[in-house]
Image (cartoon, rainbow, N blue to C red; front, side):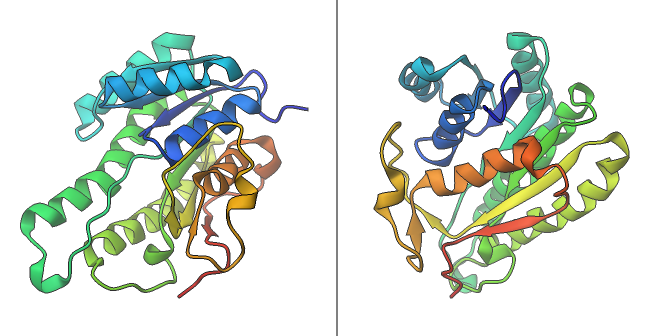
Amino acid sequence: MLRLAGKKVFVVGVGPGLGSATAYLLLKEGASVVIASRNEDRLKSVKAQLAIFGQIDYVVGDVSSMEGAKRLVHDAVDKYGSVDHLALIAGDYIDSPIEELTEEQLDRMIDANLKSPLYALSAALQDLKAGSSIVMISSVFGTYATGVRNVAYSATKAGVAKSVEVLAMELSQKGIRVNAVAPRAMNHDFVPGRDWKSLRKLGEKACPPEDVASVVVWLLSGESEWIDGAVIPVDGGEKR
């Protein structure tokens, strides 16, 4: 039985890795999918690549402002008339020690990893309803692991983790769940239909994007309906 048959899912932030893998696995579970990013050529490519697996469309836009997020959500809802679930995949990474961190770099991390998903979530709320699920992307570096040279990234991903806890409480009265996954490193080499489980083993630092996308899909499905406010590590046991 397909876990998301008849559901309409909006995936914000689709690139060559996690966003594309998430859209693919959603389609395989019977969902109709609208994908979004600022890069129309990439969206066209992903749609062409995945259209054989189910109903997929795209909208072009930018969620770095509240107005941009509202326009993007409006365009996405126009595609299928409604939206059931929301996957907020957009994010960015900067590798910089604190003594080299610039104001521009810090603002970039805050905008990409914290502001943008919150803008998109806020804009989509009027179209979500009881039973809807929202999944955000944190990081093990924002929860329990410690790295170096990534203070801006880690701080913003910690902000995502705390946002999930607060939003889950806030939106529970509406019957809307909010959770997150916390990956470590991912490869960005998604290829539909491959045997991705054979490409990694427990304890490795990096995984195929499908490993993380499969947890995103589970959190969007009814199988996880008693999970709310959780930040789930998806790291293969690599906690250093």
